[in-house]
Image (cartoon, rainbow over all chains, first blue to last red; front, side):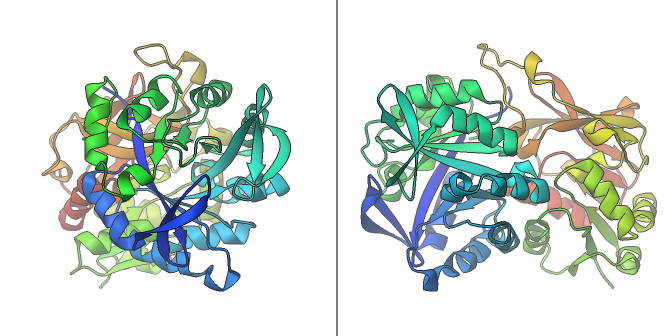
Length: 252
Length: 214
């Protein structure tokens, strides 16, 4: 036996509450982040990811308090992303109790940020989030929550980010996010084959079989999901048992 | 009297280590410190670390902490975590750096090209996630922890001790590698107990009460 594939519930947080939208729009309230984090920890989540999608700068600091509170009660790895613009933002999140910080839009605007943050804090805590959408015959990187095309090829971009020091990639299919139709498997497979660092597949999980496919066909090292867990459709434990029954090594 | 000193030499996030210790040992005073006299005064010492080993050695030396760490490793219950395990050895491939040389042996990198799982998929580096730890030694630190329990890892280098008798545990990725060593008052682990949920908290709880003997 060896390394387990990870299941990572994702909490989209805005103004101190967990929300979930469809295709990055139409947000619905899903509860208190600390309570939800503790529930997923009890269910056997391997890590937790918090994406701060707070729009107003007034409420930006809320995420730090949430992470501090979660980190004093939940002893599994915590990743935090959203609004990370400079090395100082990374430091603040790590000091609050995050183990990894996810960089998305700012990596596109300023790729040196990834190199600087990895150089200062180590690659192990720098995750680059790639939001990709099918455009013609390839996948293009989008930023600003999926609204802005960048002209960058997602597979090339993945390679470049790992060269600059990203220790892990969070790959979200914008076409699938919130649709419950499954991961974009060819996209995940292409990126997983192109780089040496672990890949987290994200966007589109609607059934437990989708998690299995993400690992077996998409080549993902970890699978991230939100809505199937938030609304009580499945527990994390049910998801892991299902993956185990399909021959995937998980932590139970 | 400081019960547990967590050595702070500016490398990485020590908050999670101290939070986890406070959680399992609310009756103990835990301090995160870069003061050699506090390390000397503490009843037990945790030596964590993240990032690159050459940077860690440089910071230890610059901050004047090296001697205090060596004294602690020779005299009181001492828990090395991640780079805190690797630093105990003589040399690392990472940046061709010298370690503290407290334990004979080296630190080497996973060789990506040679690593595939049972169905032929390539294995990623860093080795990141929950892997099983097999115990190869009876030890007070393993109390309440089943053999083969999973702990959370994130690392690209691992230790190769000269003396196999100090190996207290190993994992497989895909080949067997040493992930835990124990010698006298030293117990050191490659994984992160502070991020390994129940099993990790049990290990830290054991450390808070350990008398420094196997």
